[in-house]
View (cartoon, one colour):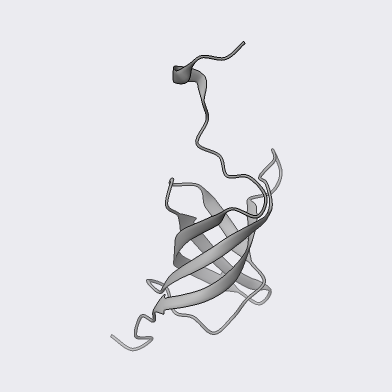
Length: 81
């Protein structure tokens, strides 16, 4: 049986979460979610610092980050400083 202190802050599949883009690669974007977890999305064209709303597609495991889909871009960061 679990107690209140043992409840983890992981997201469930289909949860809507807030995230900030931290970087990218040829396959997509890396994000930091509202609970501090690292995530990945097969999405492109956003500069680091952009704020987005996402849906969780797949939970993290020992090999992979949380996989999310980007549903909405709240604020786009400028690519040129």
